[in-house]
Image 1 (spheres, rainbow, N blue to C red):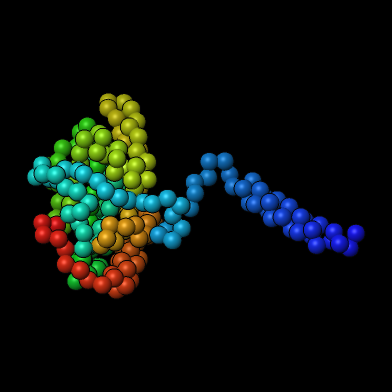
Image 2: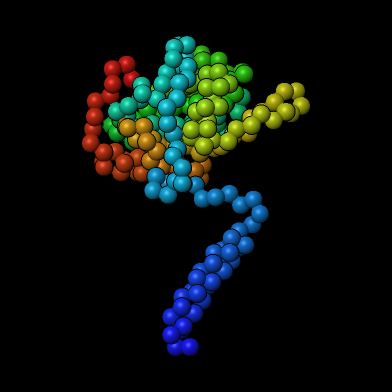
Length: 212
């Protein structure tokens, strides 16, 4: 019996670990959203190559932003509250960054290509801050970039038309195009600027590509 003791103890330890894991799972309410990922914890890559259309009607790709950090938000111009608030806070974040804002490109990507034309999107974002780049594209292009950034968006019919439900997070992407951090709606522009400054300080400055 003594010879079996180490194996019995090991088996008990495994069972306890499994039951603890199940207990944690059962404590989560049904439909509870997962924790927002960070660069270190994200189980799948966030971001990647995209091809969209700028306010001048010309093609814009992710490569055009290399050498700069990007602040990326997905929304639509008919959004009644979330998007205006997010864009206003994006502008305040840029102001708080001061000189460091020169190393950051704020980007707004429409998830409503049916209504949002390139010039409409650019005019919309310029109302909040002229430094914000407005992008849209075809249904396929928007679906592709939303999938890359793990952004939820769904058209919802309402009386007199439709609205679009969508993820309300802001993404910080590095100069190499990789995901760095998520900002939630409750975080202030001052908190965001502090995190961005830290990211900038840890990144050697590079020269943006021509035309970006």
